[in-house]
Image: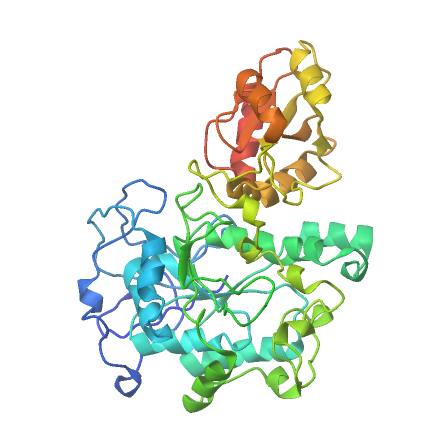
Length: 467
C-alpha cells in the first residue's frame, strides 16, 4: 500500500526511509482555511468510543500485511490531547456545502499521519492535487490487483514523478489468487459475478491496509453510480471496514468530492494541468481492472463501462459495500441493529453465503445445543441480514470459514431475528447482533465471543484457545 508523504514545512524531518519527500511550492498553496496551521495540530479523535493518545510513529517502513507500512515517517508534534468522540454525522451536515479543498484540509488536519488517500489510477488524481494545495503532509496508497491496464501502471509512475512522491502498493495474497485461478480459471467473473475475484484481489488487501489507519480518503461522487452512490456523505464512520483501534466505528471515511459533478472534476484537472490516465482519451471514464472495464459511448453513464454484464444496482466491488441501499424496513432502530416489519423480520437479502458455511435451521441449532459430545467443535454466528454490524463482518467471517474448511471445526450461521429472536435470547445468549458462539466438543454450553473485533485473526485466536 503506497503511502506518499509530502510536507510543506522545511523543518519536517523524514526518518526510517530513503524515499524522497516533496514540498508544496508557495505558488501552489491556497489561502489558509479555517486558520489552521501544521504547527497547531495537537488533537486526535477516538473512533471507537475510547479515549486515546496517539504518539508519532518513528519506525522504519517495514512490510507488514497487518498494518499499512509508512513510506516515510514525519517527525510531527506529539499528539497528546484527549478529545471526546466526534459526531461525524453532524460534521457531514456542517461540511455538506463546503468545497472539496476545505473538506480535504479538514480531514488532513484532524488525522495527520493516521489518514491516507486511496488512489485508483483514474480521475481521483484530483484528491492528490487537493491534498497538495492544502500544504499539509499527506499519504497515498493504491491497490495493485495484478490485472490493471498497462496505461494505469504507467500513470502511477507519472503521478509519482509529478508530485515528487513515492506510493506503495497493496497486492493480493498470492496463494489466494493461485487457488482462485486454479479452481475457476482466469475469467470466472463473467459467469458467476465479480464479487469473489474482487474479494481476493481488492477487498482483502484493502482490509489489511485500513487496519493501520484511523481514516481514509476516497474519490467517491454521488453522480458516479445511480444504484449505490447517490447518498454518499462527505464524511462518515466507515460502515464496513475496521481501523487501527479495531471494532466497529474505528475508521472514518472521507469523501471530499462527494458533491462535485464529474464535469467539474475534469475542469479542475485541466485548470491545474494535472496528469491523467491516457485511457480517458480512449473513451474510458470509470477505470478498474482490464477485464472488467471498457469504454462507454457518448450519452452512456460512466459506470456502464464497469461489470457491464451485471445489474447497475450491484456495481460495487466491495470497497464501498456500505453504499448498497437497504429497504426502508431495514432502517436503524434505537439499539442500532435495524428496524423490522411487524413480524420482526426485514426484507433484506441474506448474507454469509458460502459453500464453506453451514446454514442452521431452528431444529438444527436446537440439536446442536443439546449435544454433549460432538464429533467436532462448531462456530456459529447469530445474525440478522439487515444488521449493519453483521454485514460489516460478512467478509471476514466468510474468509474464516474458507480457512477452516477441512480443519475439523464447523463454521455455521443461524438467522436469529423475527420469530427466532426470543428463542435466541433465552437459549443462545443473544444480546445484540451479531452474537458469535463456540460449541466445544465435550460441553453442551456454548461459549460466547465477547470482543467487538471480528477480523479473521481475532476470531481464529478465539477458536484456537478453545478447541
